[in-house]
Image (cartoon, rainbow, N blue to C red; front, side, top):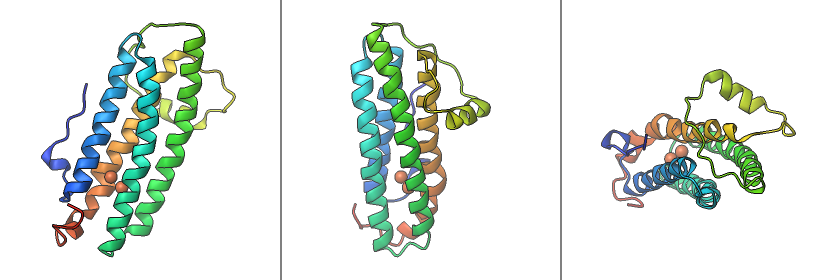
Length: 171
Ligand SMILES: [Fe+2]
Ligand SMILES: [Fe+2]
């Protein structure tokens, strides 16, 4: 199901909110591409955009936090760094799956399934040399989505009271 940005997700800064909207849009595009036959070129490109744009967005937030002297800056930066490391790791795995799919010329849509906590742990503990098949694609995307959304709704939201005093900044 497509994610929709809602008012409750607002951190009270137009620039950050707009960037969150765009991140959600990229995630929705990726999820749609997975379910669409012959859309794997779009999938690879959008995934790359997601990783790049997440970094751009994290830089924006850190600059704003610096400017408003946000007390949680260092902690927040650490979380951004960890998410980027994990995203790069997952992207590597996804690229491997996509190249395998391309070489076997498979156009079958990947079935949707919910990811469980044990699957997440398993994915994070994966040996990089482990063989992956196309059924791994959906859980990996859901993992990316979960990291980003949980960060927006949890950690980013802590900025809200501090941003309230700087309405016009970067807006
Ligand atoms: Fe954010
Ligand atoms: Fe953030």
